[in-house]
Picture (tube, rainbow over the protein chains, first blue to last red):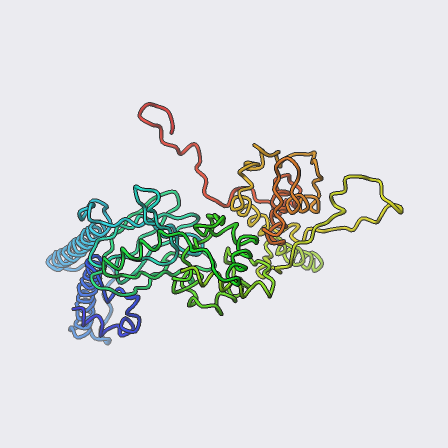
Length: 339
Length: 171
């Protein structure tokens, strides 16, 4: 079935990193099965309807040279009964099929989003907050010193169910990593949940799936599924504060960051920068993209983003900050060195 | 009739102004208006002519909305609440200690004031200071009525929709 669907939509292969047709875990697989079942059943009904329509063309009918029926013409009683029965049965079958589809669709949605579904003790909880136009990622922990905060990148261990607890800071967003789960809307002042799991290591792209303003199209994130030991190493590293810059150029860069506008919105653990409204930059240099999946993370792109963010994402909340030419290079060195 | 139609078209054009967005603000460095915060009327060598400093975002609904967002982002509300005042003085008032004209407000934000108002110069880009100024002016109905919003951009709960608790009180 899967192969058949892929043949129908070869586009799905080209975007295997972001495709609902290439599920990488049980929850995405359930959604894919549901889609395949809908496609199969509705395709069959479509075929039946078309065949019946074609058959009706071949039926014996009154020739055009005959007189039209009288206005008060009534079909015979047996014809009337036959018509009532046929239409009644067709209507009943339609209603039953639609009800059946509602049941399997709702049950699939419940099975992939109800918090108590798999063993909650084994599950990893990740909090996602959609914000115009980036994702805040938080790994909650009872021990406050073990909370990891990141942005636009999600690391998950392979083979372990992950419970997404999502909300929004402003408007309705929708969290969607097609290879791993179905869509889940993120609603302001409300928490929605969804399960996802990756059965093999890989990088999967996700995207906001609910129009949320000017830069909706540039609101992406990457999910990095890695073996559990690698994930724990990553988490342990994320818990460390940013290392103090050793060389004078990066020290100058840190000074530019802390003395200017950057520190008002961004936080870097281990420094005085504690802004909460922009993405946390403590381990910025380890991210693969900047501006929520818009550009690869390198010095050239970062310079363009800092100098003129409105050029890259018109409407972005990132402020156009005056950075002097001689301050830019140290700032880039400092930020890219935040490993 | 023709004059009336032309007039209507011109009026419609003028309404675009309130929604005009400065999408590519200039990241100019901060200018501090020394003469806007003059503490003494006496001046050596006779009075200087006062330069007129205009708010570039006067009458812009977009700047008011942005200013409101920044008012929360930069924690102005931490001291001034939503304009009603708290640790800091209220911002909805008729009498300003350091002047209520746009240039005075700009000056107050950039330079800071004694007894607690921090100096935001070099922290908040100049265009955002002007957006904050526009928002504060709108709180006092000193922005054109066409630009001043009648309701908040953010979600609000209507108190009438709060469900009563079993005990009978609303949470």
